[in-house]
Length: 178
Length: 91
Image (cartoon, rainbow over the protein chains, first blue to last red):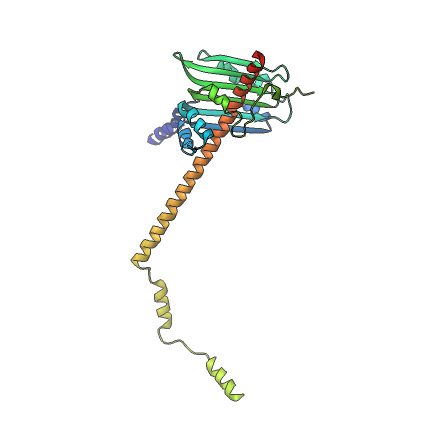
């Protein structure tokens, strides 16, 4: 009985420690992807990682400030060899969760060129923003992000152009495939 | 050449070891290291273990940092894209 109780506690601990705000159930997308990135960082790991940021490096200083209010970052990124590999139905399990009462879509854009769709949702609790969901569905890639905690989206966007991230300009948008 | 042969024969002649030689060798090989040596060995092991733990922790830290940077890169790209598209529309 004690062993069972200990096992139950050990099983429950990671769930308590991981404030992921929706299930990143993307098995059908993952099955079709040629490459994928799966990152799950809770508050403890973020704090640990922050200790290795260089205070004298301006980029690292920005990151340190950005992650101050974050309790977790959960990212699933999938790349496909060709366009049209994934379907909108594959993303339904994610969208269904975000249509819950605690989530509010703040912006959504669809490219007329390649149909790339990007949505940003806020997780609201008592008039307070406690998390962000980002759903970026492009012909050759799908990215789903959940950031738990309070994050400054403006500062997050400004990371584009740093750390090897190419700064996106309207003219840089991917061209429609023939 | 006889004298040379005799010298060589004498020098290379088989000789039995003195009495108790085998016992003395066995006793010396079985002798345990002194207390100081044991402490030195233990201290060296502790230093190596602490160094290895520190190196492992540092490796884990840089790995966590790399993953955090990757996560932020992937999260920032769509937000940056949205901002740029909105900027493109409004301009």
